Image (cartoon, rainbow, N blue to C red; front, top):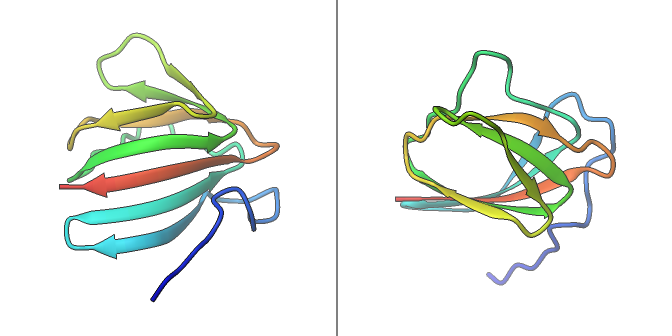
Length: 109
């Protein structure tokens, strides 16, 4: 089946109580998601620690990430991407709310 879409269209209505994660593709060893953030952050004291490598692109908006062990946040704007290996603990410290921040996340082994 052929599917098409646009990562910047059909965005959920703002404001959102939580990030919206849309699964675009799920195959053995590969998962692709569109994530829409409207100001959400990782709760204080919590870290993401994922089992897979993750490549993330900010399609629209802006965000800041903190990588465990680093002294300052990494700022990401439209077009910026980051590749994190499995178990690279990180947290989202800020996302632009309006217009929403749109991420493309690719998880792979």
